[in-house]
Image (cartoon, rainbow, N blue to C red):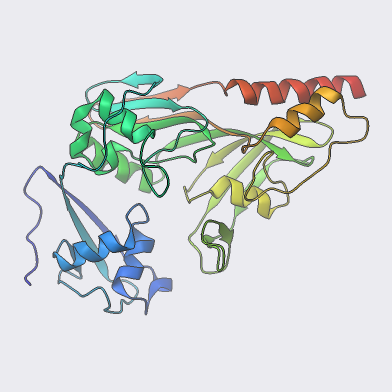
Length: 327
C-alpha cells in the first residue's frame, strides 16, 4: 500500500489533526474514534485499510499503536449515501442559500439514521428537500443535537462549505446558545470546565472523567423559581450530551432528563398545574435557541434565534404561575 497524494479532486475532503498525548499507546483505529467521533470505528478501520488515513504521512494498520504528537490525515471522497432514503417530512427552514441551510429541529426527531432509527430522521428529510446532499458526509450535517432537544442546526450544501464549517466548528468559532430549565435553585451563573468521556460501564451515557476530552460550558441564570432555575447556556466545546452531563455533574440536572436526571418532588404547596406539567414533561428541557457563524462563502457574520417549542413555554408558564401564587 502506498500513501495517497494530497487531495486535488474537488470531490475530496481532507481533515488533518494531531494525536493527543493521552491517546498514546492506543490502537490506530481506537485513537481515530476519539479524533473523529462522527464516524464509526468499523468505518474508520476500513478507511485505514483503503489508505485514506495516513499517520505521519504513511499508511498504518488499524492495530498499530500511536504516540502523542503524530499527524493524522483523513481523506474523504464524495460517495452517494444510497442507504439513506429521502423522505417528505416537515422541515422548518430558518435560512437557506446556495451554501447552507439552517433548520429548527423539532423535539422527537433523530438527526441521522442509526440503530433503531432507519427512517423519519432529519437526514432523511434533508435528502428529500435538497437531493444534492446525498454527495456530502452525513448529508451535509455539520453538528447535531439530541433527539429530544429542539433547535437550530446548520447544514452545508457543498463540499467546500462543509469543509469550512466543520473547521470553524472545531476552531470554536460557532456561537451556540441554549435555553434550559434545571432542577434546583442556582445561586448564580458560572463555567463548568470538566473533561467528558464515555461512561465505563453504561455505553449510552457520557460522564465527567479524568482523561476525557476537554469540555467547557458557560451558563447564566435567567430566572429562579421555587425549586428550579431557568438558564441560558453557551457551549465552548461540543461533546456528546455535554450540557446534560455538565449540569448533572454540578447537581443541577435538566428537568425531564431520563438519562442524567434525578427525581425531585415539587416544592410544598406546589400548584396542581405545575405538578401536572412536571409529570408530563418526559424529555430534557433543553432548546438550541441561538446559532451564529461566519458564512463560508461571503464571510458575512450571520446570527439566528428561535423561540423554544410549546411544551417548553408551557413549562416556563407553569413555573411562573407557581412562583406568583407562592409570593
